[in-house]
Image 1: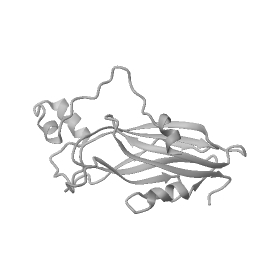
Image 2 (image 1 turned 45 degrees about the horizontal axis):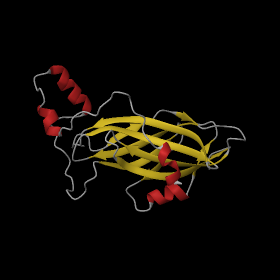
Image 3 (image 1 turned 180 degrees about the vertical axis):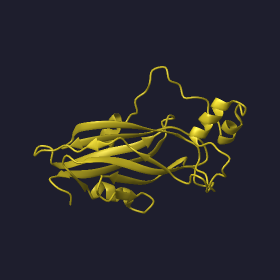
Length: 200
């Protein structure tokens, strides 16, 4: 299924937009230190004097998606710890249930290391019986490497509503990926879920 969804999992591009010149966190921190508005912008990105977290030099990943969760008001989150072995396989083979008509949101916890991560996006294609029923793209943003002050980032996505009615109930399959402005895919995975009359 992943191969079929590849053409659908392409991030949208803004005409005329060019990714800026790459800079290290140190270069950003030293950039125009006397410019008050630039300093506020750097602070909004989380570029600070807080010490960076130690990083394993043999781990070259810039972004590590640590967990995904389904957040539903009044219910305990359904959380998938992506650091545990077999978690991606479990996502694909063990569908979870979403009650028809319920309002929910996805939530991701992730780490950034080595360098500034620019324009992280979440892309998702959902299919039912092989036919695409939705394609979503959510901008997550740009982030510096995690620090002792901010050891993990959390992004809550826009709220969504599960379809309802007899025709909407059933099994759905999805392919999702996290990709940045440089078209680097940080995580790609298949998963499935069922829309049902009630929670299980």
